[in-house]
Image 1 (spheres, one colour):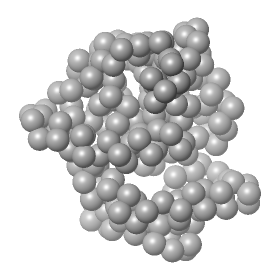
Image 2 (cartoon, helix red, strand yellow; image 1 turned 120 degrees about the vertical axis):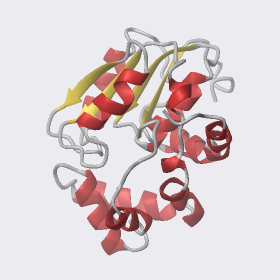
Image 3 (cartoon, one colour; image 1 turned 90 degrees about the vertical axis):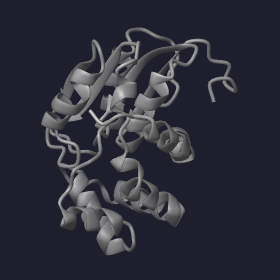
Image 4 (cartoon, one colour; image 1 turned 90 degrees about the horizontal axis):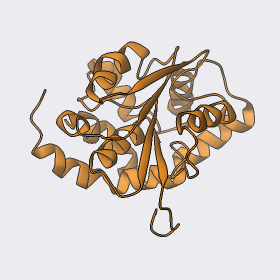
Length: 211
């Protein structure tokens, strides 16, 4: 993507699952990467959920009722009707195998030894009401593993950031004046790339030693 856009200097950002993929990509030290922004990122260690939560995650988007319950869990406040329908439409449009890749495989992979070699300034954005990946989890599992990383708290926010503009302002601030932004949030470019990168992430995790 950076080659196609002719980017010589850029900032990589990822949200949630895309945040875990962004950590992996940054650990490869790609040419031109100037900074990393992780928005409510998944941890480089396997997620640890009780069985009922695992089942809920597996079936979160099987039907409209489950999807609405997932949205309620991931947000601090109900989204507008238009935004809610957009979220539902986007999720139902994805392939079933893609939706299952995260809760059955990638969420349980170790990449902890890889993130320790990330060598660019890193900003973590965390919602203070995030129940999926809470603030204390970022402070325990992500922040200390990335040298020099900083964390900023988004007030009145769950896992899904309620205001793209506010999030964009924080990302721009975190970029410290860099001109280019590779991917703004966990939207189409990064999300698609995240699914395509699942196999590469899995292969890398095989050689990783649990920390």
